[in-house]
Amino acid sequence: MKAYIKKWNIFLSYLFIFLFTLVLGCASLTPLPPAKPFSQKESDRIISKLRDQEKKVLSFQGIGKVMIKKGEEEIEANLFAVGSNPYKIRLEITHSWGRPLIHIVADEKIISVLSLTDKKFFRGPPHSLNKKQFFLYGLDLDLVWKIFSGSVPIPSASGRIMSLRPHEISLYNEQDEIVETICFSSKTLLPQSINFPKKGLSILLSEFDEGSLGPHPLKIKVLKEREDQLVVIRYKKFTFNKPVPEEIFQLNPPPSFEIVNLNNS
Image 1 (cartoon, one colour):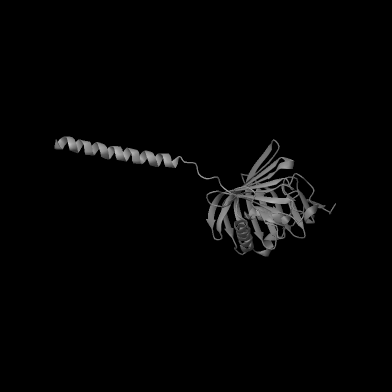
Image 2 (cartoon, one colour):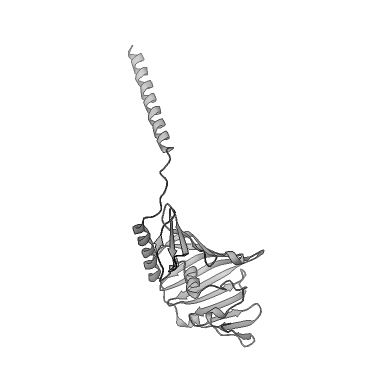
């Protein structure tokens, strides 16, 4: 009799465990409530935080790779990028085996491009570089600076801020047109993509690393949809706010190079 009762108790224990785990399993299959757009307070707070982070970036230095694809043409090269605020930037692109390809130095007044493949030196106002083969064509210097620094570009003066979809915030201009939409990770709230509908430009951020100013993307994709052009920047080393010598933003042509003076037209 005792043996029978013992077996019965064991059976009840197993049955209880089975039913308990079954209930837990069913509970986990219950659909989560649908995500909602950010509230106005949350949207304002997130954009304000991004603006504050942007202001903390005084300079940057990065070493890695850049892949440039336009149509069927594709090139991958080594990249050295350095920037100082107010907006100054130097980019050095070299072939994977070390041969220099192009050096670019730009600030708010002038852009200089040293093309080592065809031995030409271009110099002129920032918006005078009207050659579409340069992947910076058509982009404002401050936007280029923020792309290579991995910052989220936020217009200094904009209209309203609104979240229309979950994990997404749109910024409007004074004409009440959407000029920028930022999508965030549902888990970390880190920015994942920035779209500029009026520019036909999208920026994708990934492979975040914890840096001195917080999480920072080491992989940056830039898609210029109207020109079927994709640029992928992948940093191996990246640092913020280290002193940058002013001399690094000087670029002069070698004696044998053709000098091409650009104009505003």
